[in-house]
Every structure is written in C-alpha cells, then in structure tokens.
Length: 164
Image 1: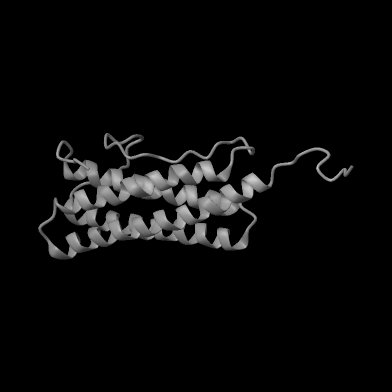
Image 2: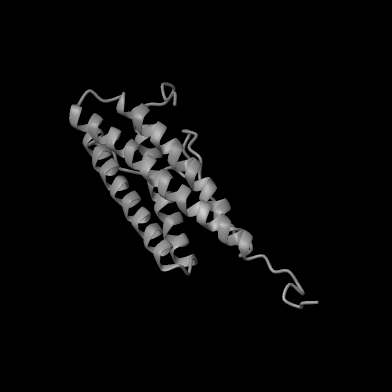
C-alpha cells in the first residue's frame, strides 16, 4: 500500500479511526449473532481492535505531544470500511466479506506505516499488528465459510416434507 502522499499525523488518525470503527462493527456483530462461539470470536476481535486503537493513540501522543487528538469525520487515507445494513435479511456472510477486505487492507496499511519509523520497537509492533490483522482475516474467513454453509442450508422450500 503506497502511503507516501500522506503525512504521519493523517496516517495515525486514519489508523485510530479504522480501529475504532472495526471495534464497533465486531461489537455489533457479537450482539447480533445467536451462536455462542461466534459471539465470543466477535467479542475477541472487538477487544483486539480496542487494544490496537489504544496503542496507536499512545503513539500519536508520543509523536505529536503538542497536539490534541481529534479524529476527522472522514480520513483522506482510503481504508475500506464495513457497513452493517439495518435490513435484518442481509446475510452475515456479506458483512464478513467486507470485514475480511478491511482486515487485509489493515495488514497492508500497518506494513507500510512501519516504514515511516526508524524506532525498532515501533516498527516491530506495527509489523506485529499486520500479522494480527492476518490472523483476524483468517478467523473471519472461517466464520464466513461456516455462515455461507448455514445460510444455504437454511433455505425454506415449501412442501419439502409433503411426501408423495
């Protein structure tokens, strides 16, 4: 991901906003699903995003000690978002597909962001975040495949049990 046209402050604010939005999405998904294991996975992902957000906030405060943290309504950095439709009939697998794209973009974003830092500790932490985003992607992929199977098998056909 080419981030050279953005300054460091824009990138950190975009990361904070993205992590916050991801936390909200996973929290909403956890509230929406009935499956206890899936609920736990979404709660886990939400807490992971919250931890990432806090680290990036601390990094922002360290890099910009004289600035007040103010998240923009929309960031100039093109990171994909996840939309949970208000329509209850939208399959969860569709939302998970969006989340997978966002996690892949976050992986690429953190690898590129790490190139902005010479501090080995920060660079390594951002690489670790990239690896974690790949882990999140894999969790979502597994859940998406399960949901697709469930969504396909949950189709109702009238008269399926009527017999001859």
